[in-house]
Structure formats: structure tokens, C-alpha cells
Image (cartoon, rainbow over all chains, first blue to last red; front, side, top):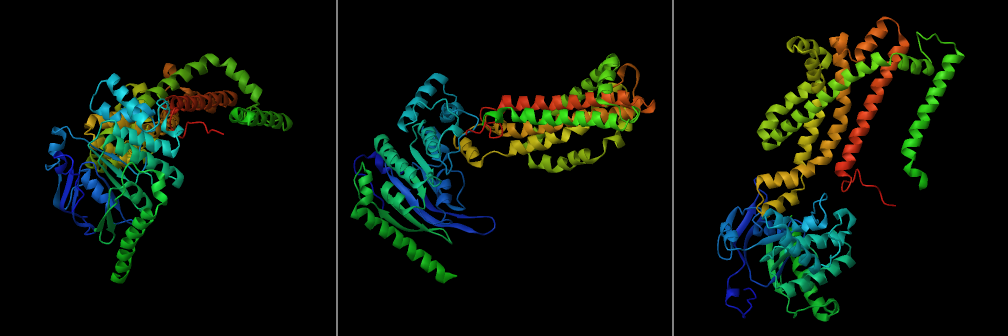
Length: 271
Length: 262
């Protein structure tokens, strides 16, 4: 089912598995039908779908911020309580930059290390590395309000990367940005993913963003939230902006939008 | 935009000076007797002549005001922290905080003055009750107004309750808390004056309210005006002090304090 990198044996252990995990809220609303999904090391998986398709719900279940109503999730083949023991880290980048407005960029990025009580000097040098990765060197002493939206998002990504995470979860991180800034950040993110050999689960409602970034796209539909299809994006890395204007890119975008259109037309007849 | 820096000072001061001039002119023009409306000059002369008496009373009123303000901040903050520990506590006790707020202090002051032996302490208790509510409600609101995504972030990083309180809840609450301080400082002064009126304590513990009462009885209107003037100045000074504290604490980051860049 999934794209399994044949290289390493260790790669055979999925980072996250959802086993018939679903979500029904207390008022009976079904947010998500049972999902079967495995995320493999080194993948860039995108959850693509309209509002209400349960993509954020699924992401929050993967982050262990909410529990599934039935079924279960496994991280590296174990329950969540074993995640910390094995020295594994999951981190999340939210829809907004969610920086602490009272703290400077440096203190914001250092937060995960401060919470782990890592000593200030080594923490600061790791912060400097993370800021360099996202291109924010020199902005350590700035307050978040002094940064543009795109730069705030970069700081938020630096905060996520500062702990060297094994799994990076991103919940529509660039949704509030203008398209030009978004494309820049997408291009930088895919470079980072490639360079740092990250594993990413990315939520978006933009078809083009999904095609550009992903190794695999999970297409979802709403009412009830469910997985429609999986599409592998077979384009080698590192990808550059040139990929956006290829026939292949357009083909994938068409394929994804057809899946989405199918679902919504069927949804309409249900009403 | 050069004048915009001074405008907040120049404009209200000009209005004040104009008002005093009009007041003086009207009193002179209609030959108003000083036992009805004294001229501003007479008020100033009285202020200087009665300075010994009025300054002593000012100190008494200040002592009660600051005592009450301090107690209100202390008690209010503690209560707010208890409220956010559990919904149960808040739901059970918040209506009583409201009850305390809506009960007119003049109605319960006689009771407190009977119950509390020390007259100064009794007045401080009265003024504290008046000043307490804004601190409780604002601080509680602030401690609850945490960005939910930041809370998720803290949870994902396995932050302890204590770390979340110190690093997230208290800084998030700070702007609300300082808003509460501004309201509460003014109320502490009002509470002190009202309580003094009810208690009517004379002698060495006579506050400005007592001087106003006495001046009213003996139709010493210039002194009444002078005492009123001191109360007003105290109120304005308290407000400015709170503005300054708020700038000091939030100036670097909060929208309410950050200067708009042109």
C-alpha cells in the first residue's frame, strides 16, 4: 500500500500507524470514519481535503492531542507512552505561528529546550542552528510582532526543528499567508525536509501545495470525514520551483481535483 | 506628525486652564459669594493657608487608599488563581464575588466599623471590598485567555503544570491584570473616601472626606474645594502611576502599549 523506501531495514518500522482509528464527538457528530494509514520514515505525506473532512482531527490524533473514539494509533509500533522513552520526538507547527508575543524570537524557539531544562548555553547554540536553517539568523532579539507573517512562520518552524524531531506535524501552516510567500516557504520547507531527512505529515486544502510538497497525498472528503484515495507523487527530489510548471505537475493536480470533485458531487446527491 | 507626541498632554492641560479662567471670570462677573462658589484664586490661597491640616488628612486618605489597593491586589490575585484551578471553585464562589461588588459599601460600612475595632483597619476593609472585584474578574479572565494552540504546544512538550503557569498563563494574563489595576486603583480611592464619610472619624485619623464634611457643616466652602482638589489630584496621580507600571511591564510587546509605527 505505502511507498516503502527499500534502503534501510529500520525503515520498515512505520513512524505512525492508524488502525481503524475514528472520531465521533459527544454530540454524535462523526468527524472521521475509521482510517487505516501508515506513515513511513522519510515520507512527506499530505492530508488534502475541504473543511470538515477530518484532516486536522486526524493530525491531532497523530499528535496525541486527541484520542480516537475507536481503533487505535501506534507510534513506532508502540503506544504513545513509549514515545518519550525511546527518545523519539513529535512536534507540531500550527495554523498560526503561535509564538509567545512577550518573548523574543530566541526565547520562543528555545521554549521546547527550556521545558526540557536543557542548559542555557547549549540550548542557545541549538537555537542558532535552527534559526539558520529557516533563514532567520540575526532576528534573535526581535519580538514576534516585529516580524512579517512569513517570518513568524519561519520562527515557528525553527521552534519545531530545534529538538531534532522524528516526526514533524504541520496543520495548514501557510494557510494565512499570501501566495507568493507561501510558495517561498513551501520551496524552503521541501529543501529542509530533503536535507534533514525529516518525516512530515502536512495538512492543507491547497491541491498545488499538496502536489509540490508530497511524496504521497491522502485525499479526504467531508460529511462524514473519510479517506477517499491515496496518490503517490512520483517526482524525484530535491524539487525546485520548475516542477510547478511541468505537465506532470498539472496531471497530478488534475487527478487530485477529480477525486475531490467526485466526492463533493456524490455528497450533494446525499442531501 | 511632530505635535502628536505632545498632544496628549497639551490638549487636556489647555482645556483645564481655559476652564479655570472661565470659572474665575464667571465668579467675578456675577459677584458670586465665596460661600457658594469660591474663585480659583481663593481655593489656592485656602490650600496654602490650611496646608498643615489638609496635608495631614491627605496622608490619612493615602494610607487607607494604598492599604486597600494592596489588599485588593493580594486577595484578588489569590482568589483568581484559586478560580482557575477548577471550574467548580469558580462556579461556586464567583456569584459571591459579584454580590460583594453590587452591595453598596455605604450599606455595609457601619457593620464593618462596628466589627473591626481599629478605625484605620475598618476603613481599609471597606475600601478593599470596593476595589477587589476588577482584580478578581480581570485576572481570572486573563489566566483563562491562553492561546489554545500554545497550550497544545506546551502539552506536546510535556510541560508541567508549574511550567505552564509560569511560562504561559501568567504572561498571558498580564495585560488583563494591568487593566484591572487601573480600575481598582481608582476604586480604592473612592472606597476610602466613602468609608471615611460613613465612619466620620475625626482627630488625628481625619482623612480628606472628614475635612469635606466639616467644611460643609461650617460652610467653609473654599476649604471644601481645596480638599476636593487634593482628592482629584490623588486620583489622577494614581491613574498615571498605573499607566506607567503597565508600560513598564507590557511596553515591549503588548499591542495596547506598543507605539504605532508610522
